[in-house]
Length: 371
Ligand SMILES: Cc1ncc(COP(=O)(O)O)c(C=O)c1O
Image (cartoon, rainbow, N blue to C red):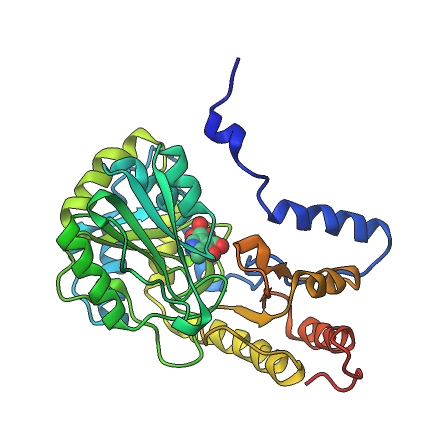
């Protein structure tokens, strides 16, 4: 038996190293204040949980890969309300969370390479490798506002360009003009512009733009999810929307893979996409944590003003010191960006305040009132 060389060649997912450190520190009796992984730990709103329960029926049939028409309508209406972009419900596919859809996209496309920003969510690269594509890294730098430089690549050989704004890990956002430029490039060289917008609803300045707002959506797809917006990571519910020709290709591909979302979850998703009040509340809770941290910490926030991540200047040795004192953060080297570390504002406010005191001590500032 021999396993796939792609699988055999993959480095250990860097976050596994945090799991090992957590286990070690717990055994040593250290209390963990965990800002390491970006998994929301807010309660899913009650009305969404009720919609799920109400959707349980005596008969359980296979869901269709295309998704419920009512959910596609609810998502298209949300896109229109939120971004002012008109998308036909037929050009929306509900997905099983957004990760599987992001991972699978490279399988649907011809072309030599996939362009992936660094730092970034690792699934763009892994999906490309398993689809047999070459990965070309596009460095994101602070001096460019964490936007990639799109000049100088042989775009004619490109299958797919990934963008992710609001950005994980930096929290940066992209203006609509940037999406317009990237979409124009994608049309000119006939590659796909895929925009991962998982954090579009967690913002503290102007509401971020979507790639769905570009004037011509030829070759453009956007991915979004309820995991962050509606605190539903366990439900596994997202969508992909955009260019009708690409959506048609995904409709042919997806039934082969077994990723049709469960109908119960789709019913809960209709409730979630149809309500904005709970999203405002989620945003305010993250805002309180963000404000408390930014006010208390003597560190430079090098990132933007969206997502629930703070992206601080600080080397791996500093992240390691925090780890040993029980404050778990993700070092920038996990994302290919040493010199920074990421703090996911997922624990409760009270934990953020306590962690801020510890971080102040570790950075050489006297412990005092944290916020
Ligand atoms: C940038 C980014 N995109 C997509 C996802 C996937 O989210 P989900 O599969 O829960 O929709 C995540 C999850 O952490 C993420 O950080």
